[in-house]
Length: 85
Ligand SMILES: [Zn+2]
Image (cartoon, rainbow, N blue to C red; front, side, top):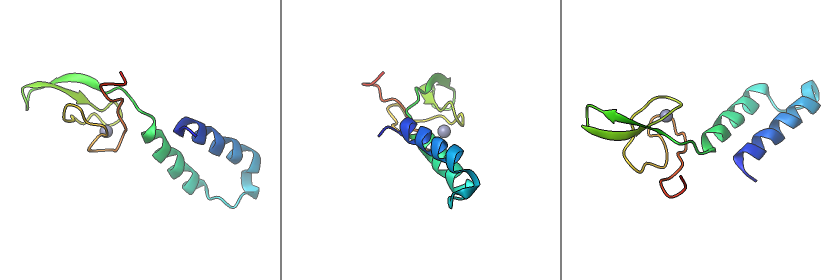
């Protein structure tokens, strides 16, 4: 199952179980939040004056990451690797 499918699954369950469910809303929110980070995003390549070169920047939190990073060091967002893009 892909993370996006898991999110759909949780949201479907949440919609149909509603207040009868034993899941807490907070737990479901946390699960969806964690799953969203697993859906790879293409980081934006931006010139980084600190390092004097172009580096991948996370679209979620804006952090500058090392070239070839698979995950954002700051927020944990998964990146599309160079081979996948
Ligand atoms: Zn980030």
